[in-house]
Length: 372
Image (tube, rainbow, N blue to C red; front, side):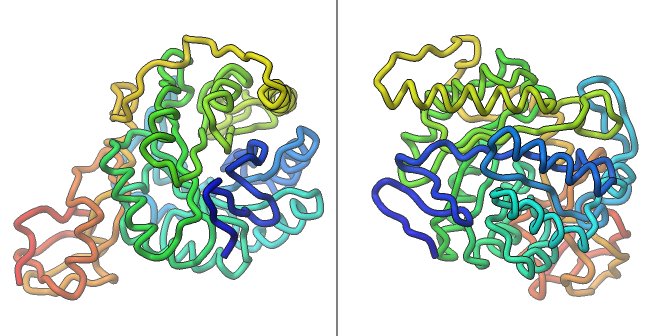
């Protein structure tokens, strides 16, 4: 395990983060490689030229992310599509991971991925990635948090749409498993997020409330400079920004990401701000981005939270009197389907309770559906 001291510093791969270290800048490639290996490599090159510290992809399968009857997802720009099919098309092939890691490492970049389920975490562990990223929508996914924490690698997790109580619960679970190498990211669950809705004052609140946790910021605004620089001034030690080769490309995330020249400008601006702070030069924050100090579910986040925060579903038909098991229930994103029990109930149900009624495949598990 990496060092952990009063300055709250540890290593992600070979790069120190937190304390007095420079801001750790992550180019979130995510799913914006558009199904093409050459685009994935090109985006790593973009991050290298811009001077980022790391690149991040996302590792998931549609069947372990969404219930099959999740329905259509409506993006901010009005486009919509069947979310299960969209996610299936965006899956990152497992055999690309070691090649992409090697390519990024040869260019001095740390390499890690967002993990969305326990099986995915086990697969990624084979490749010795630098850290695990937990998306905002998994912050209540207790089984995943516990599973990832046990891997003994740094955990970075976002908090869009969450409450402070949910953040506290997530941190507690990670620490219960002996993992204290944690980066908590403030972000707003809207794509793209308007500057006036970013509420960057929450960074100051999180720093005060969780003084032993490295605090960072995942920016979903389209401006490459205003919010990232403001976050650094407020004390963010990690900045994550979605990148794309071209915002006009098809795909679910390209439209809300920044392009190569914008990423270069962002990194340069952050480093200039850090130099000014180091030299005691006064730096100003655009008040438009400050907003509230309170971490809660904001109106603009409600749709995404209801759509993507997970709950417990049947993944096959369960006859009355059958014990719940890892084979017949799972923690999934509901989309437009009816919501079920929160993920924390999953561990309580498996092997301990049986179904009090017949439950169809794809049906949410609700209170009253189980008995001893």
